[in-house]
Image (cartoon, rainbow, N blue to C red; front, side, top):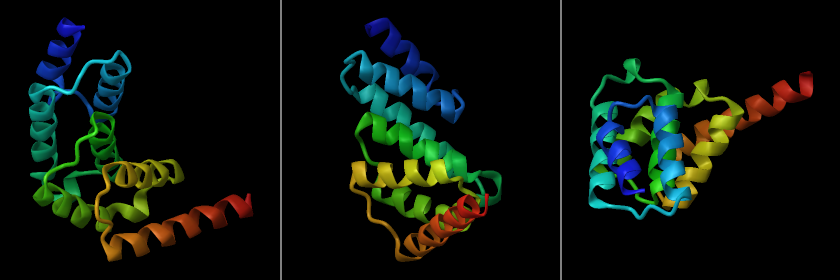
Amino acid sequence: LAALSAAVVSFLPEFGLPQAVLAVRALRGFGVPLTEELREAADIMTESLLGRHPTEIGGGDLVNLLRVHSNLGIAPSDESTERLNYFLVFKVQTLTANQVGHLLASYATLRLPLDDVLAVGLHMQILHHQASFVSR
């Protein structure tokens, strides 16, 4: 397990976000403890993604970033959380129903503050998805 953990740590910042979610979930499922190296790899991945311009990032990427943190059980820094909220306000209308669920679960698990504007956007997106399910 130590070799697996070391491999994930070394490649975590390079993984696509869906793969990172699965890799971290696998590590935690195998009982690999949270190490400083895993925490640093998640921080590097977070800083890399949130250092981009908002138009370069998809809403799903932001949700998967939160899922990585949630699976590790560590919240992003306050500064990263603030930037994440800012990005999500602009991307919330692009989220699928599944992504909205993962987003809310991650916020709850990590006990992150939910920005008021983001909360309204999530509410509107949930209503949008409900309406589309009813019309089918």
